[in-house]
Length: 284
Image (cartoon, rainbow, N blue to C red; front, side, top):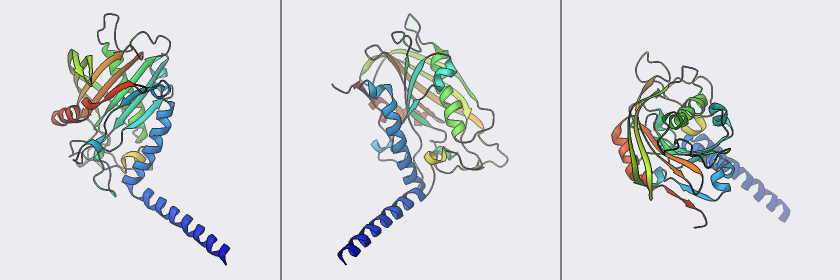
């Protein structure tokens, strides 16, 4: 009889765990949180930042009281794609987050065309030239920004990582203009940053669902374009801001970035979240 009670308790416990897991996976928000938590840890462990004990922390939307940004900063360690794209031996880690979910059963505001978080991201890139780590990626020998190298990072991210994960088969666009460059900025506790503000024309994420794509695990199910007859992934203008600095002590170029469709949201993210980034040595 005692063994029967034990077995019954074990079976009920297993059933309860399966039920909870099923409920979690059914709700888009909790599914996204679980998937991104696992994904983040896998990629964080592969990153050269972790392997060399470099502390790189960018606050997520959990820092604010408003429903603005997703409450996780996700890590992605590029496994050679950027190197092949640039035809150089580069190591790159991407930190990013996007618009919060409009409800636990809803989807990310990343898809909502009327939301200020439509198509929006913020986070950071960490890039090292593995063959010549003493040569700063994105800078020339006089310390000036090499626009083509810096622009290649978000371009590669958007056209070869983000959009394909959503099933985008349309022409993938990423063009920039109206660059405003300011040198020697103090930011995130360090001097010597270069700030670049730009207008960016790239594909928006609103599209009609055709099948299932891995990006849906993060952002939820897509929303169709609100304008009748508008094409999926229609390009539009966004505002972009990036802070770039080469950290000689780590031999890594770090770019902190935010991209939104309105400048007010860019400014708010910059002030309230991105500027609170922490960079240093874990042992310190």
